[in-house]
Length: 362
Ligand code: PMP
Image (cartoon, rainbow, N blue to C red; front, side, top):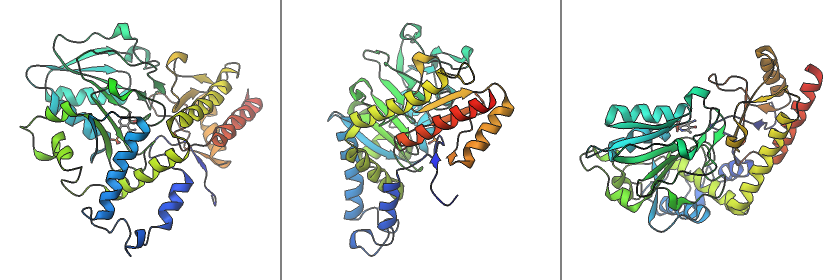
């Protein structure tokens, strides 16, 4: 390939060409420092401006209330699977989990190692073809929190409304749909996301945490595992993933330049509708994995009539510049990940390819 392709990878995922070009432009000399942003001190005023700017922009874009902080923590989203139970499963309370996919299950399995847990609902029996309905969620008597995964990257399902938990802290893994649509942050005590889909390159988890949850950090834990370490030190207790945070900042500026979350959400809905329509109008040639009411705007999963045809689909698509369409082995088939950076043109080209492929093979 001599040109950039439409990249449907689930994460690390496509980034807007504009921000890669911006990073390229200032790669050797960041704002007159004579150094790359990778080479400047994380304690410099230039980097402080980057990290504070990233927090401020995310707050602005997501309309995050004042009593929340944005933290940048290493170890990806998977690190949060550990930090959450370690900080909050205390005093005989149980970490409550809704299991709607592999990552939700991984989060639960980490909590089991830490302390009391409870499965509040699971859709495993139907191979995670939908998220849980509110009336299926049964919390334990004394829940430490309820954990959900708002978008199930592998299965292509997404929560459309979030459970009401009253005083019980609602914690969400939003790794694959953060910043993709308007979200009422005030419903959540803690939101986390690995950066490598809608936020930038890999290397950091972004954690949006309510102040009372910072105060509740388990003080018996080692320094790097407590949330208040990150909050008290503006995520600069140690050297953070500075280049990743710089890229996140560029990505947030890009989202703002697009018109913010309202515009981005509309575009994401339009993109997803294009692909789902192609599935629904294929006379059963393409079969969606997710039940329609749970369909994700970010990861679209579908099967073809045979595995041979699926292999052919992926290989032929790659030849015309549609990359990264292979589904995860737990679902098989095809997965088109269409995060914020995927333009409408990418989905149009995918749909054209799908229709063309079907007319030749059906
Ligand atoms: N949760 C979800 C929903 C994910 O999609 C992923 C990664 N694909 C993870 C957690 C794990 O993220 P990380 O690799 O940053 O640990």
